[in-house]
Amino acid sequence: MIYLKICKKIISVILILTLCAGLFSAAAFAESDKLNYLVLGDSIAEGFGIKNPDEACYGKIVANTNDYNYKNLGVMGRNSEYLSKYLSENEEYISSVEWADIISVSIGGNDFLLNNAALLLAQGIIFKNYSKFDKIGEAFYLNFSKCMDRIHELNPDAVILIQTLYTSWTADYAKTPYTQAAKRINDAIAKYCDEKSENIYIVDTRETFDNRTDLISSDTIHPNAKGNVEIARLVLAKLYEIGLGQNTEPLVLTEGIDRDYLNEYFGFPLGQIITFLANLFTGNLFHSIINSVNV
Image (cartoon, rainbow, N blue to C red; front, side):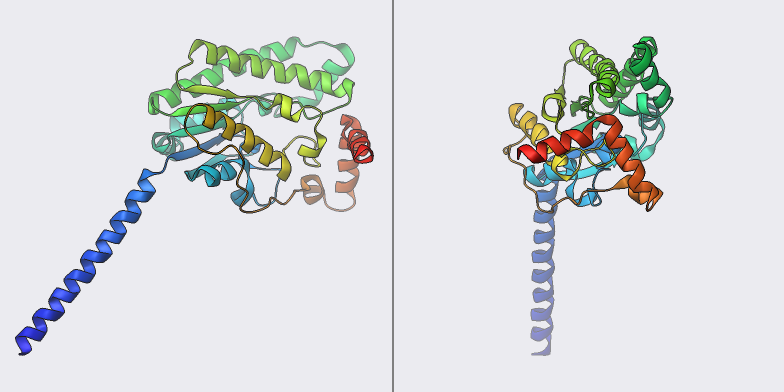
């Protein structure tokens, strides 16, 4: 009798373990069945214009909408040279690229903004001299090519989505050199994609963001919460077009919270003064006022 009870207990334990193993395997299979989505690049990729990028940047919105596994390695200040370096030497970057089925890349803005931005803008605004812009564009093309070639080397099957550089300033005198800088970056991206078109697609942000100060944070550069939703919309449209997504309308599970970075960094009242001057210089202040009146 005791022996029979022991046998029943053993059988019950085995059944429970088998059931748990089955459930675990099913969950693991469901997770592995999802596409892996990686975001690489700069502060735009990171979601720097909002306070809660882990929940509400465009990469997270895309992942939520299409039910992808998701990883974001965007870093403020990253330019094409450093991205190339990390793709060659950093184990987290290497393993993440190998893991990914889809890779979104935002890069190029810091190739201009990281070094001598004021000098470049002054040359463009005052002297209309863009020769240094050309040199930076040429250097970007070489570094960008290294980045893309390395990604293809690590993961030949990964689909790469490259975002163009938009112009976020509205006053003509400030917008012109910014547009000239963006043109060098975007031409280099287009050149590479024309030469090596396999598994690489351009997500063009320019038309959506042109003169749309309502999509830009108070620092005049980064997408705000609304801007992140719009980038997600563009990425989703491209994924739908190439057959890797089922939805084009962004699924926003958590609302983004706009970040006021200059106020955060410099504090009150200096931060408010700098924010005001930045928006005044770029023309975004007047453009925002006009838009609000028209609405």
